[in-house]
Structures are given as C-alpha cells and as structure tokens.
Length: 264
Image 1 (cartoon, rainbow, N blue to C red):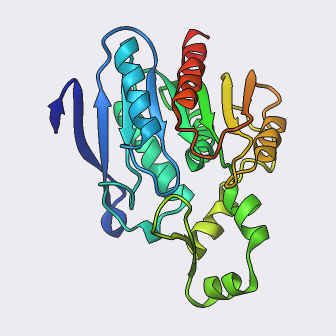
Image 2 (image 1 turned 180 degrees about the vertical axis):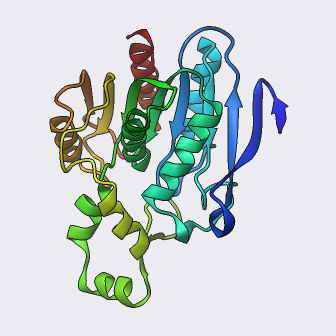
C-alpha cells in the first residue's frame, strides 16, 4: 500500500483459486465527519475518469472519505475483461465496500455502475452487512442493460457470433477499441435484473440523465423511477446532456446531488 497527497492505494484479492483476481483501489481519508463516497464506474471505464476524479476532488473539498477502484479487467486491476459479468463485478464492489467503507456511504454509480449500485444496496440489506447506504447518486444509470437494451437489439449476425464465438463486438463512440459483449455477461445479466419488480433501497436516490444520451435513452431512467416507488427519488433531466455527463456543468450537477444526499 502507498499514499500520496492524502490518497492511499493498493489492491485486494477477490475470489479464490482460479477465480482470484487483484482489484486495485484508491482511498482518500476523511478530514471531517460525513459519509464516505464510493465510486462505481461504467462498462470499460476506470477510476481515473473525469467523473471519478471530480468525485475525489469534491471529497477533498468537503472532508469526506472517497473510495475508488477498478473492476477486474478494467484499468489496473487484474483479471480478463472477457471474464467479466455483473455478478463478478458486484462481488468485487461488495468486497471493496466491506473492506474499506465506514458505517455510512453514498454509492455513486455511472452507467453500468448504476446497476451495480442498485444490486449492491440490495445485497447489503439482504445480508445485513454493517454499512448504511445513506443515498444513491446514479449518473445515466443502465440497470438491466444487457436484458433491456442489448438483447432486444441483437442482429442475426450478433446472435450467431454469440452462439458460435461466445461474444460479439460493437464499435465504441468513445474510443478506437470496440465494446465486447460476451455470452457470459448476457446470461448473467438475466440473473441480476432489478427492473423485474419493485426495488427497495431504503434511501434517497438522485438520478442524473441526459436527454441526448444515445447509449441509455432517458426513457430508461423514467422506467427505473417506476420501480422505486417507496424511495425519495429525484430525477434531473439534462436536455443537452449526453451519456458521459462529464462537462463542467454536468460535474456541478453531480456535486449538487452529492451535497443534497449528504445533507439528507
């Protein structure tokens, strides 16, 4: 473990035997009272992205603890990306939360991280883990995206590739490397659905969603709200916002949402 500018870093081992993988993490210590902020990134994102760093800077400003990490197959963590599933990345998320988080946390999930945040709070409540989720901030959340967004849009060629190769590729608008979706990811996604019933988080939820999001349509955020009837849910629709929501004005909205949840 090392420490620089108030941030310690290292890795923890998650899983056993052939499933063991090293999960890299970074943790900013608290300088005051308040909940810890836990960053849950998106598909093929890492803990050094614009929003993750903005979260860390916000934590430094407010004296909060901030915890970031890379899922297996992402960033500097071990493991193969092609082995990744929601269950696997959820296991890693819960391991990091259990290892480092204090009694109270705010889970901040971006895109796929929104799905993992919702599953994480479900598991924390179901297992009776000794951590209280004070709130969720979900940025362009993509719960059930494999079931709701990918499977219905599969072409015959993609279905054939999944059956014969075990994966298919799709161009990414965010970089030269294509997105790879595996049969394992899609099949596991069906086991982790949250939009097949009511979602009980027991905490306030703030959703930030761009209306120009071509990856996760804003109708998906509206659908998510329908499945959170018992929670205090705020949805901020950003008319000119895209999927990333990484512009300065988007970061300000993220900070405002964090302040609101922290005060709740």
